[in-house]
Each structure stands twice: as C-alpha cells, then as structure tokens.
Length: 156
Image 1 (cartoon, rainbow, N blue to C red):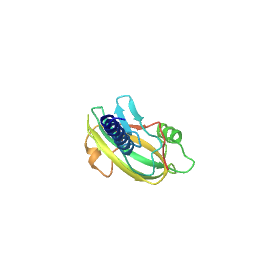
Image 2 (cartoon, helix red, strand yellow):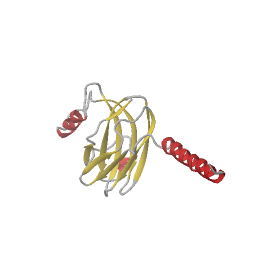
Image 3 (cartoon, rainbow, N blue to C red):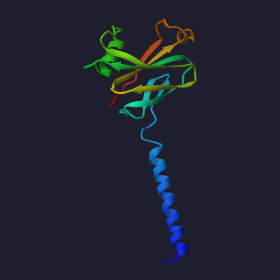
Image 4 (cartoon, rainbow, N blue to C red):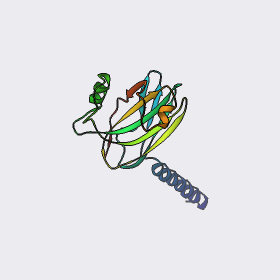
C-alpha cells in the first residue's frame, strides 16, 4: 500500500472513531419537554430516564402564568387515578409521596427543572394561574386550570 493511501486511511479511520465516541458521549437520553398550550399540557421525550440527574424543559405557549411540578406517585397509584381525582375535585391524599421539582413560567416563557432522582414513578402537573401573584406565593390561590400530563415517568 502506498504511504499516502495508508496515511489517508488512518486519518479517515481516526476521524470516524472520534466522531462516534463524541456522538455516544454527548447523548444517552432524549430531551424531555412539557409544553402548555391553550388546549392543555403535552409531553415529549424519554419516559424512562436513567437514575441520577436529568432536566425537564418547560415551555408556556399561553398568555397565562404557570407552575409545573413533578410529583412522585404513591405505590399502586397511576396517572389515570390522578386525572380522575382532579376531574372530581377530590382530595389528593394518598396519591403522591413527594414533589421532586417545581418550575415557574410567565406567559410565552420557558424554564428548566433540574431533577436528581434514583427511582420512582412520577407525574407532571401544569397549574395555570391568571396572574403572577400565584407564582410568587407559598400559599397558592386555586388555579384557573390544572392539567395532568398523561404520561408516567419511570426512573430506575
């Protein structure tokens, strides 16, 4: 083999391997995104993130103020149980074990919720408010609307 051809082959092989290593090292999980529109909350992305740190992107495409939360489902409970309870304006006692994160947005804004969880089953709520007052208070007024993202996230 000619030295120039051998050198070109080695350079090309090295570049291909470097690209493959960079591509596998930079990913591993899909972008996780919740989008609120006037029609409700929708989710796209990984529904089974690996344990550890991951981010959920939130996008508010409405003229309202929103609080998004990630709540751990109690054993035996489902996203459907949560949805039915909200429709009946029932008590959420026994549905959740804790809240893992909260992200607030104003109209037409985005935010990111950093999450660091080792396991569990999770549901996302979108609490829609008419004013910014609800975003700043620890004692929130009742929301104008409350949506449950119809996806269960399973970590671990």
